[in-house]
Length: 152
Image (cartoon, rainbow, N blue to C red):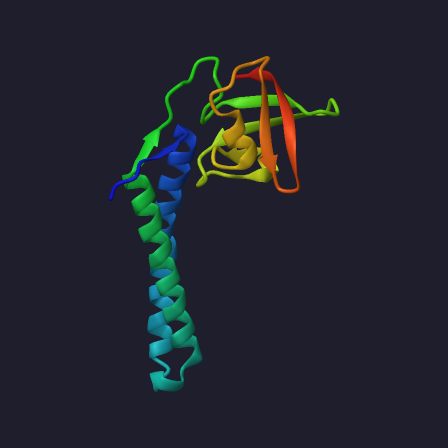
């Protein structure tokens, strides 16, 4: 089953760079650790070897997940004056407080930078709306009314 993953061009590029790093830096490092630990003899009681093998399994899982996401990645189209993935949106809440978010895919979320997922309660409520419109976001704990101040 192929499920497309809509994301920003920047987000796709960052995931591609991360995948290259995992394959060209992390994978050889772990292989080296496994080899070094295996040289220590009896593998049945070799903690360093077993830890390195666990690290390898975790890394291969990350690589497989990134490959799947990138294989199904679709760069978001410009949505014009409507909120969509890749758009930066400033909203005003019921108390007059303004916040700015950038809508991204769930693989690009970075709350420190204000990047929120289009699947999050606020992101989902904003999708498709225009400047001047108000939306209802069902956030944990309470419903919030957000007026869209700008979309860029």
